Image (tube, rainbow, N blue to C red; front, side, top):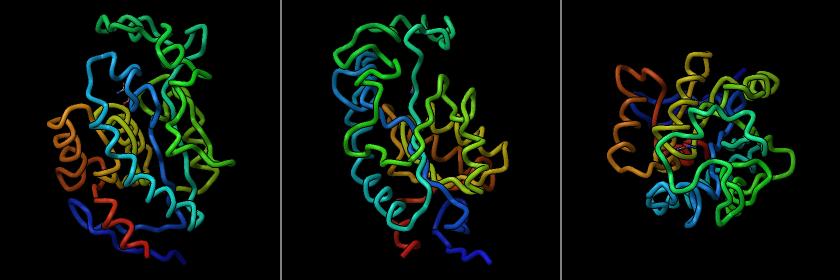
Length: 223
Ligand code: C5J
């Protein structure tokens, strides 16, 4: 029988079944988090994202120590851009476009240095890395099949950015029947007001998309 632990969360305690849960790290990529990457080229302050790294390292270490599955995602495209819709490529007249040469290689192109995950959170051998062309982790990927194969029904959601790829993935997961616990200090936005609103939206209306909790409360409950 499942052993559930109660995580203090909003809007209500989250009944975590560690044997049915996976830790999801969304798009913790150099292009979003490091100075000189795509995120900064769009005018963003990457320090707002970088503060997620330290708490996420502790959550990642706990998952690995307990044997909880860990799945990483990366947003990016094939070198020939055949999986990038022109609508995405041309959006917003950025100073650098997807596929352009940036300081860390071609922007958001698979195989390039900047597209890969920051060293602090590098995937361990055997941890799936899901490459996705969109904001959500389910669209045009094997993410759903990987979760099904693992028997996972609960997602511990972390990563960047809160109102974009984290939100899209949580909404997709919620519609597919997964219970999502979003760790509030392990998700980051370039915009402080979006961070606050995005977290509130998840837990509003009785948890319309899921639950939110701090990593400290989550880790304390796991002990
Ligand atoms: C963005 C993401 N913000 N991973 N990507 O473009 O949230």
